[in-house]
Image 1 (tube, rainbow, N blue to C red):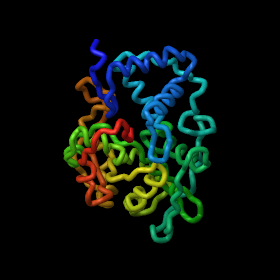
Image 2 (cartoon, rainbow, N blue to C red):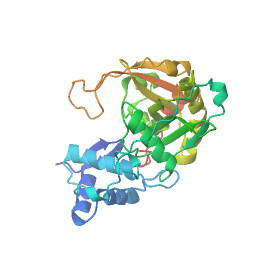
Image 3 (cartoon, one colour):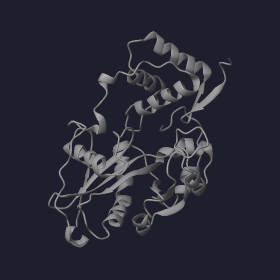
Length: 305
């Protein structure tokens, strides 16, 4: 085996010798959890966000990929230490009671109240509970850099939920629209956020509410992301299941359709469609997004993974 051979994992260049060093680290500390190993790697590599937070989620994702591709032997999962599903303190079977129907013109409900939902808050529990209960895809516990919004009216009635997180690693339609290279994608992918969940709660029967909320989101998300994560966003993406939705609200809010997915999941290694085809929509947050996303800086050994 050539120990000097370089592999690229999650946008990071690693020599085979470095993979061997990671294995030695794990073998020398059999009592460590996977999170502890990831934390150690972040500290050794100075792998942190601009706000100084260790990128342990990115490091754990890298470890899993090394397990799959390089047969890295990871510590056993410590199930008893894992958080409850969905990020809720209450039991996973919790059912949130519905609210009486909200039927009113949008102008009568404005201004709407937007709440960011950080860890450990009741608002987060409610927002994730709504996604789990009412969104057709459900919702696992958000990890990594993300923003979760709960939107309501002045009477405190919840109307909608937005969840934004990491962008897809590869998306042919989006990548062609941007026109960037693979090195540029590695450097700038964190400057794209995926609008992964958008839920209008079933009792919110308000005309034009969805497109209005999408418009409000695009006007505030860049500021919120920079404030909470320490780097700028340049583009939003979302994937709308073609056979289920027409994307009318996105179109009304000036999002742009740029193509279709193949129907393969990001973990799919064979050429078989396992997921429904989806229309890809994007929203530029700055006129210069193409130039900024396509710029390639000299490697620094870091990045935003």
